[in-house]
Image (cartoon, rainbow, N blue to C red; front, side):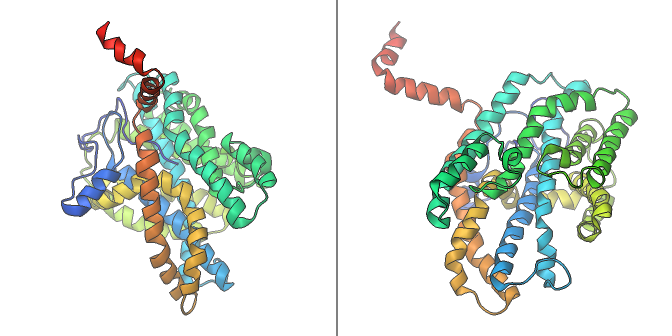
Length: 416
């Protein structure tokens, strides 16, 4: 679900020169240093990982609330749902925020290329980087979760195997029109992959106009057209494709355009951006609660304002740049891959300790489930995902294997 926020060829007056969050002293600082993600080149934008934190927090709480509500037999939406459950039931919209982030991050180097402020993006390394960065954590998690589903959920191996193969090929949405039996949340990653493939073509079309009014107007018009088709002609079409979410990626392109051209210096009205950032939280709730025909247009508009304010305000940037927020947000890909099965697994144990009504039980489950969930994800991130952030890891692996397969040959090479 995530890409590095190190953007080759893109500079910013607001981005710190360091490739890591601000240091924290003591034991906490040592932990953060081991979990801070690696960047390959360029500058680090901490607010983006802060937004990833917001996104993954919404998604995790959404699934935790759904689990607790199911245990108590209560609804999570509508008038009969407790207020807390009703609010957190909209956490699935964190996925759309992830889509905006992906559009922004992938759009930045293309915007720099086409708008004359950066070097050309080479497509070969672009696609290889997607594979070496995202594939290993995903494939390994699916290979681990498939037998776990057989053992814990009792799904026959013969039934789980075709779902696993379809998921590994990023075709489960297309083949089954539903989330994978191995890990149901992987549906959004398949949509991300569709975007990764088409991003160079979309960027060439989006950033070809030299006049900013035409360029940005075309992006906004494309978003409106996409939403209109989704709420009219496509409302009965299966939703698990890029066509159903393309407007969020295009909003990311629009933000990348602004960031690359107009936002090269800090805003002189940071207080106004902070006020907008605070206002967007209740506005997001109102957009989520609105009828679908209204929400389809209102939510993208609010999320655009929220994202912009996150990058332009003083206090919003400070909140999102907190080292703990940035570090956990940097682990969001691992958390996204593992949180749903971990909630299910841990919940089988913690459910016995639930007390009181649904609201009290939600607090208990959050206290019991979230810390070990975060700990497991931190270990997986440190051992699997973080090493894959090094673009040179395939070459290092080949050299390591070669040294062990042909030790004499490699030992003799320096003497030649």
